[in-house]
Amino acid sequence: MSTPSILERLSAHRMLAAVPQKQLEWVANHGVMRTLDSGVVLTAKDGQVEGLHIVLSGHFAIYVDRGAGRRKIMEWRAGDVTGFLPYSRLVSPPGDVTAEEPSEVFTVPREYMEEMTRECYELTAILVHIMLDRARHFTASYLHDEKLVSLGKLAAGLAHELNNPASAIARSASSLASSLLETEDAARLLGSACLSTEQSALANRLREAGLTGGVRAVLSPLKQEERENAIILWLEKHHADASVAEALAETDVTFDLLDQLAASIQGPALNAALRWVAAGCASRRLASEIHESSSRIYDLVGAIKGFTEMDRASVPEPVDVERGMTNTLVVLRAKAKEKSVALSLSAGRDLPRVNGFGGELNQVWLNLIDNALDAVNEGGHVELVASREGDKVVVRIIDDGAGVPAEIRDRIFDPFFSTKPTGQGTGLGLDIVRRLVQRHNGQVELESQPGRTEFRVTLPVAESQRGVVS
Image (tube, rainbow, N blue to C red; front, side):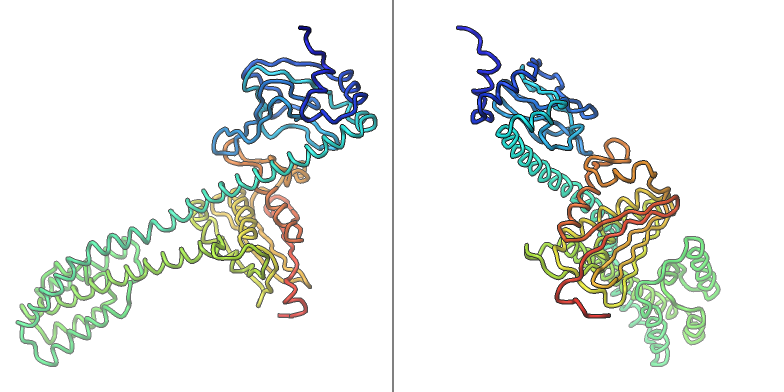
């Protein structure tokens, strides 16, 4: 049996079966057959797409690395078409296109594309539909990957923020049981001291003074040691048990109140009163720490819930921009702390709402603020400003980093373009920002110079608040 000719194989191709024979002849006369072994790269990530690739046999796949390892995002088999398609702006693929097994591909060089669109109308129409399907597939893939990246940032930020209050709760709860036992023992000892009404009132005054401050402001280690040493000296001067010094030093008890107590009570009764005061203050302090830490966790969970908009309907609705930005700052606060970056947010009085999807707008703020944090040096500053300008809400994210070089500003919103080191940037964040802002009928702009970079997002005010002046 004779080997089928290129024209016969093109006629039998799944995507090209409906193309008129004359147009297939044009393709056969302007292309070249290529055979690739398994593992051979058809088009490298940094290379130019040579032309229209008609897959005749085998299997090709495209792999990308968006910071989480190499991953297959699309594949083609016999009967598929890929590469440079009519009216496409594609120059380089987002990843290596590799043969998964011995494969045959018929390539029409890209310099013939303009002629093909003139000579092969039906073929061009088919290829344009293929290009649109490919664009939709890649867009869905970009959004999915960017959501995963954001989820990773969200999880890391939340874990970091929850660690301190959770550790404080565990530590305080562990100490509280023994502190309560000490409080009970101290109360029994105080009862056996048979204090007078006046003496009991003084002990209560001292105890209340130690309790009113709640969780005491944290002193520096040096100042805390100085306070504890001063209390030890006072206790030794009055022949009292110095073991309560640490607990008393953690309160706002004054030496004036201690002197009043010592003037009224001496000996074992003074020790009993001081032990009762110290134990009560320690127990209350531990309970307050648990309350403060659990409240912090509650606030964090509320902020995360607000950031993800997890309880919102999947239809456009009025969105509180200031609230979304505030919740986003909670997510990124840990990263800012690591670089000692100052974050500030100012919003105009009664900032109007915008119509859209809160979760998607929070994605915009996350990407822009995260990029700003990456751009500034340690100890830098990132400023967020939201204001109303006519029937628009304008959000500015300003950083004092080195700025975006003039030669790349026009490419900053292109997909897969990144100035970050390999593995640290996906090149998708600003492309996603542009797409999401456009979805909300807005625009995003960049102004940059050394020491000041501003990303400006403009969104239309929700219809229900048009004409309402703050």
